[in-house]
Image 1: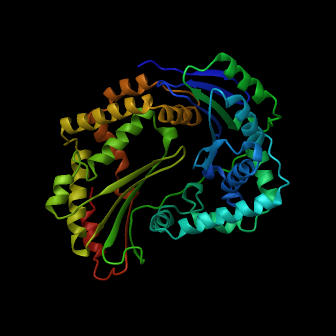
Image 2: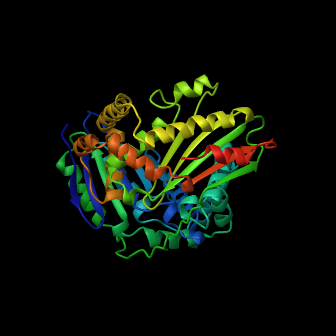
Image 3: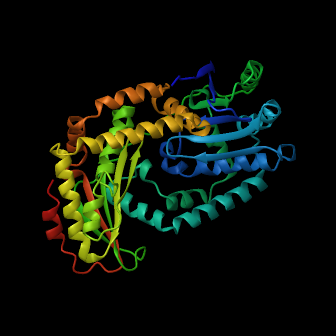
Length: 422
């Protein structure tokens, strides 16, 4: 599989990503290499509010009524995307660039309506069961005000009294040349289009400043068993096992794949503990593997009747011990890696997923890592490597076991503690 990309210009970085599949669609994206996790406590949620204001301002411009665009703020990236065509891209890009790279911060009416919209959005998320679950997990896992652990409630409280000047100041801080990545993606694009877009970028007076980041100090708690009375789960008990690690700065791309493989072996996957769980009358064990630059957390989650908690933990701990001892089936590891290989190839040949992949590489690693390199490095993931990785990840002192439910009486934590020996 051949790898394609071309850097067109710098300050800010501008890349052209040719698509592999024929399509009329062209995507122009403006990315910030920062997201909500880089915000200070006083800035929490301002990136989200700014994104709404910029996109809202664009939608209220009658000349841009036919444009397709969107914006989103992630933990370590902010994305503004325009979807267009070869016939329209040069005209559409002018409206898009002008709205995002040369915003007008005098429209108080738009600010008020978009702020109300954000608060309404956050209010809905705050009351969701997922958000309440994350709130409990992060409160127990992190010992201080960790940027990665901020929840929607904190964003809501912080932005409700913010003024339009606050998002203007935020914009000035983060919309600087070194923090911006612009990408143009399409199938067999004319050089004229690429060059015109490049020239258009240079028309805007983008700041050359430097961002002063606050030091991130996300201290994590050591081993503990926590019971949280909550009506999220009315009948059974939510059982959450969370482990912390140092983040992607310490992990190469193929090592992330290995970590995901270990997590799958501990889940209700067919290559994991599916049979053992079903034999115990347990339906499902899900996992989430959050890998950020400076932090990371793995969450295993299941919902059980109270009388099945100890049986589940015995199965889970037994599997951890097997993996840490290297007692895993080679065929299962090969199946997991083969599945990843096939998924990666399909993803890279999908136009939109390829765009996401390449953008992530540049923002995370400062360069593009060819898919051929990722696939070649899969050979390094063997039973010995998995064993060593598991021993590093799954130490008892890195575990929080959190039990959430309405009725938590008669749960013997001392008995549970005895089970959790790995």
